[in-house]
Length: 301
Image: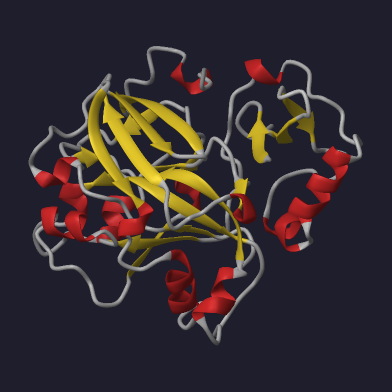
């Protein structure tokens, strides 16, 4: 089962995508159960209710679903919490030693965008970078979790994220700050789907990215320094994680920061994929000029 939100920005319809006994995948309108996919829905057992409704045939098929824009599968989260340098090879290409405790930073929730929306490069940016990441969606409020084992039960599901980053704003000099480099408009594309946690082995997922069709990143979550339960347990000691919050778990090696590849330019196309979670595609444009194509409405073929 896959959970999505389809339609124009701000007018997305909650949808559940399921494969029937005949092997045909269909998109069902979830509005009889919920007005949106958000924290309240997840905390209220929404995923289980969706499953039951599909099995019972209680949801109508959404006509024309294939022609609709794919939005973020989750309405704007309260928090987007990020883990930095969580793959040893990426830490090395960033010029840092692998961390011994999780590196934590936040992104504004207004950076969340659809997985196929056209993506703006900041007007003065010269070092805009891509980062494919496994994102975790929290399913219930948690704080001061007692164990890593308990933390595993807090996950509602998983989704692909692109943690777009402006390195000149993030790193160099006295004014370089992660918040500045990670907070730019539409810099957190999510989706195309939210896949329930019990259908995903988060410890063994292949992550890949391409720029203009050329391979960039190719790794596996087995190489995470801190796995998902460890990250959730650690974060819960310092903040309340709320249902619907999103945690970005870090990116593997193969970004432009490595010096091996050029940074993103106007007209570049970035594609991201995580096994079982689908694929993203963004076409980039220099902010102020506006997109020159229909990338904002593109859908995965």
